[in-house]
Length: 516
Image (cartoon, rainbow, N blue to C red; front, side):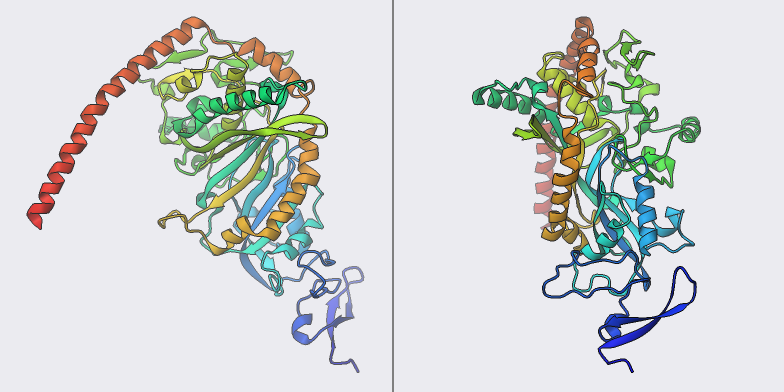
């Protein structure tokens, strides 16, 4: 006779294929919260959620839409999403009939980025087979995350799995994306012998350059323009042919990532409000894009293939039109204090915006560095952020770029209202503790390998930068002249616009008085 504090459950043994009798401590209600092949260890006063011993698989109770926050190193993996799918399947979260087809489980993510970029905040929504004990005494979703992590390598981590509302769309509701770029201090002139005053001067000077990016601007010179251009019917056909040749998109990685499923290639290229980063079609790590007039030769060195590095569009060019997708809003672009990791000095750049295009952040950093090193003039940023300019700009390495965090809001509601699960995902102390641990123990040591300016990737990148980034004075003079004429015309229109607004305001007030 089994005591009342124990219950008996019949389970199929995975190896011998016959039912076996297994004892589970607890009452009937608690023992239903089981893992297949071993018992779930209930939480005690001494055990925090997510820290107890976990079994490799749970028994599915029902299907529920959830949201996961995922981090990974972009250096070693080319199939992060594939690794996540396998881990979720092994943990019991994906039914066998749905395995291998992410569309069947409604897989969606908050953003895509250049390959090789690291992440602490990739947000993924999906419909998951969950156990009935999910989130009991574990509102932060750490227990389910740790079960999935038992099937993942150490440099991919699920920080949380939370219940989500059916209408949640991580890509559309993500309105802030915060990136960090770790830059070797010597790149901006800070040497090991620099005095504190010299360090402060270099950081202040670099901040003055970076701050120019803040605000809403056309960043067409900081991406592959064609990817974000409105397409004609003929262009759409060409784009379809091109998309068939593209390799799988990857999650947040410059050399690593998991394959992303794009359900609608046209939407990925032309969505004006929520378009995210796309994988470089060439898969190359060149300093600039071929669209900008440079390409790599057989020796791996970038050589100019066009004498035009800067020009001004004096009339409409149907082959080079901009759309609203080229405009992006940057909330912050700044440089932090001098820091050190593994004996190497670096500064951390913070780039925070609504969304980013392919290569945008890396071109922003590359251009700012070129200006700081006096390879490009100070006014190049203002010139390049004008919709009529077409300027070749350098592309910084990807190995030190990191997605730090996201924030979400319900776009159809006023203010910054967001779903309850998003408050937990972004603000939970327990989740952020796991994120910080992963950053300190996994990501930072790996990123630190790329902080020596005398080694890969910086040595070659600086050589390429010095050899190719300069713009002929005659081309700069032409662009400056056109910009000055454009600016004068813009300033002349300002008084008339203000006058018009005053007139409209006056007549509006008269109408209100008459009607009242």
